[in-house]
Image (cartoon, rainbow, N blue to C red):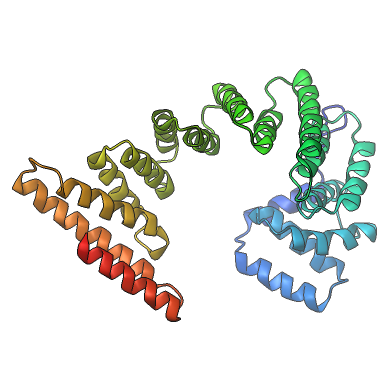
Length: 341
C-alpha cells in the first residue's frame, strides 16, 4: 500500500496504519474473511463490517477483488467513515487495484484521480497509473493493436518512474509483465533480459527466479531454467514446489537419478494428496531407471522401494477425487497404468 509523505511520494503512517499493523499482528485466518463476508451479505451497508473486511483482506493478502469492491466502493462513497487519515488512502489503493482486476474502469479512474490529487509527486501513484494501461492491454476482447498501444503506454510510465528511481523494484517488475503480456517471442526474449537485470539488483527474490525459469522453459532453454530453479531452491529450501519444479527440469534433461532425489525431497516436505505431481515424477523416474542396463541389484532394490513410495502417494492423490463415476474411472486407469509401470 502507498505510505509516506507527499514529498517522498508516499502516504504518511497514522492511526489507520497502526490499526492495520495491529490487525496484521493478530492471529487472522481465512475463516475470518468468510465470517465477515457472511456478515456483509446480511448487513451490506454496515461501515464497521466493511472496514474490518478490507483490513482483514489486506493483512492476509487475500486476493478477492469482488469482496474489496463490494465493501470498499460504498465505504469510500460514504466518506470513508471510521477510517484513519492514512488508512483511507490504503483503502483507495486497495479498491483501485480490485477495480482494475474486475475491469471496472470508471471506478478505477475515480480512485486514481483521488490518489493523484493527494500525491501529485508520488512515484508509487505514477506506477499505479501504469497499471491502468497494463490492465486495459490485458483485457479480453482487446485487439492486438490496441493491446500493444496500452502496453507501450504502461512501459512509458514505468520508464518515467525508473528515471526518477533507477532501482525501483515495482517498475522493474512491471516492465517484465508488460513484455510477457505482449506475447511474441521477441517480447519474451526482452522480458528475460529485464528479469536478469532485475535479479542483478534483487538476487534474493525467489518468485522472480521462478518466473525466469518459466520464461526459459517457454524458450526451450532447459539448462538455463535449471540454473534459475537451483537459485530458487537455495533461497527457499523448504518449499516443496521448488523441489518438484527442479526435478521436472532434470527429468526433461534425462538426469533421472538426480530428479528422483528432488521428487523424493518434495514428497518428504509434502506427502499429501496435493502433491500428486511429485508422486507421478517419482514413478516415472524409478520406471526409467529400472529400464536402464547395468544397474546393480542394490540399486534396483532401492529403486523398487522408491517406486512403491511414489505409487502409494499417487494412488492416494487420485482416491481424493470426487466420488462420482468419472473420479472412480480415473482411479481405475491410474491403478491399471501403475501395474504396467
